[in-house]
Structure formats: structure tokens, C-alpha cells
Length: 65
Image 1 (spheres, helix red, strand yellow):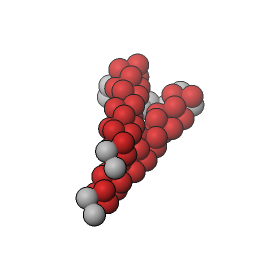
Image 2: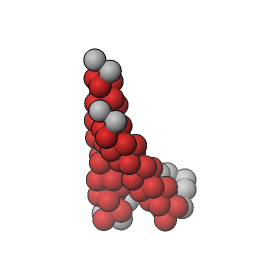
Image 3: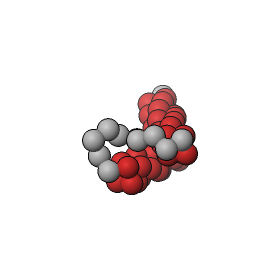
Image 4: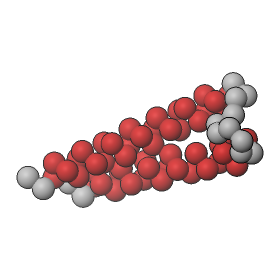
């Protein structure tokens, strides 16, 4: 019964992280800004780090099942 919330949280974090990484890569590949009003390199780096962290948190949650 306690594994349900861990599975849900793990999947949400993993999907968010993967989506953020795909979105960031697509924006960078097309030469479009990741965030408006911010340095393109800084915004892409921050979004990439946030995506990887979300994937790691999702994996951590799924290993606690």
C-alpha cells in the first residue's frame, strides 16, 4: 500500500525530467531561447541540470518501492 505514492512520484519526476530534457534539446537545436531575457547558455544549462535532477529523484523514488 505504501509503494503506490512512491511509484506515482517516481513516474511524475521521471516524466517531467525526460520531457524537460527533450524540450531543452529541441529548443537549443533549433537555436531558440530556452528562457526569455536570460543568457541562452545559462538557461540551457540550468534547464538541463534541472531535468537530470528530476530524473535522478524519479529513479530514487522508484528504487524505494
